[in-house]
Image 1 (cartoon, helix red, strand yellow):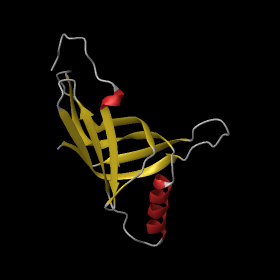
Image 2: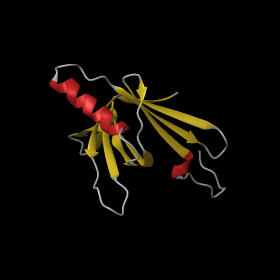
Image 3: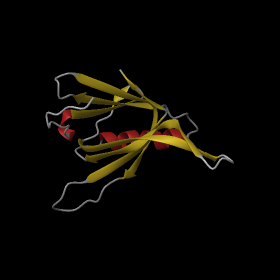
Length: 144
């Protein structure tokens, strides 16, 4: 809904939590969350010359940018690798995004059937934070 108040959302209005295998994953300090809806595009052009297009929902994907502040994320990634190597099925995760809305209400998004990977384990330097990136894909996003 549009408003004329000039107010807009800020990233600090959001909190991101990842749950995997019954545990809450310690992500470190979340610096960014970038979800995007994936879709399949179907385009037709009839003999009448008109272009027709449909976008079919096809899940969600994105990244989570974090500054490492412990080994919680590394432990989960290692557990996933170990499960894979031992032929054990890798359980899906859930991502919850909690958004404090401008009107004081709260919206909770749940991304279901999530698989994720450590896209960037970070660069270790003497005078800088270790920035990591998590890539993920989800079957669906619902409002809880």
